[in-house]
Length: 96
Figure 1 (cartoon, rainbow, N blue to C red):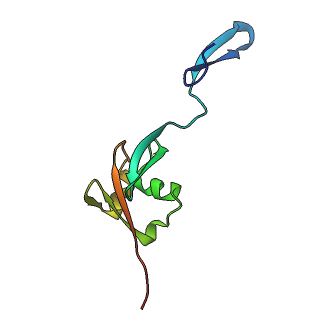
Figure 2 (figure 1 turned 90 degrees about the vertical axis):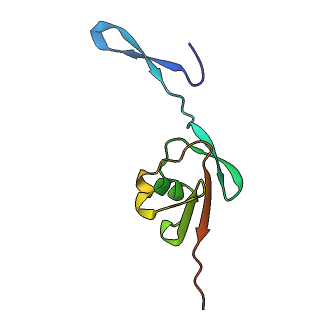
Figure 3 (figure 1 turned 135 degrees about the horizontal axis):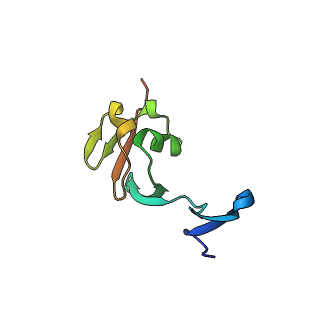
């Protein structure tokens, strides 16, 4: 049986015998992006709004630039993070 990303699972199906099914690895697939000048490995398939949550950043307190363009907050749920993206996250700071 293969080990790693291409693992297989044998499933007993009652009277009909055994089926073999392909399984994904338990490891999360990742991509590399640059966040505020630092390379980071992040889960593949995140959209910008979920990416900020994954980073434990409060989305209401930041602005995001993606690949030299400001990402509009209304577009975050539809903006998929792709390998090689360059993201700048800027926090709003209150004061007086």
